Amino acid sequence: MASLIKVPYGAVGAMPGSNPAYLAVNVEGVYSVVIDGTDGIRLYYDQYDATTPADYLNVILNFTGATSVTADDVTAFANMVAEASQATNSVPEFELIGDDGTANFHLTQLTPLTLTAGAPV
Image 1: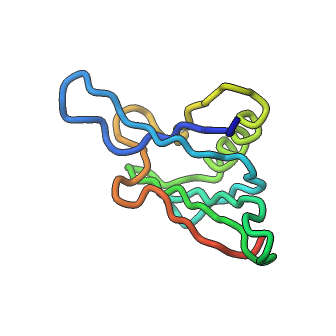
Image 2: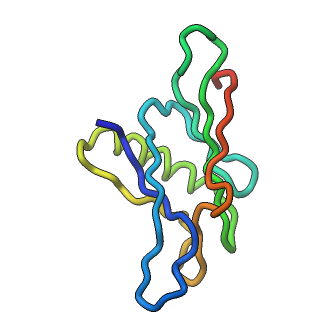
């Protein structure tokens, strides 16, 4: 079974009583988590193409909101990756540490993820 983490996606709906949406990110094979700029968390995955040794999948989670991603957020996400890989049938929910409930700290709606191929770190 895949190791998944729920990440808030998009703003809370305009209708009263509406709930935020979530994007489930598969973190199986993630071996490194780093900060990317000021509003991103970059995930490095194991090699995905055995025929091209230099190609590794990198995914950037693009956040929006009233604060930037911090080193503490990256540490918390990395810890959650380890937790998700150990707990079967569990889908933990990640929130940026600065999320105090007064603003929406979520993945951007138009480009929640950026996928790239690159060398390992």
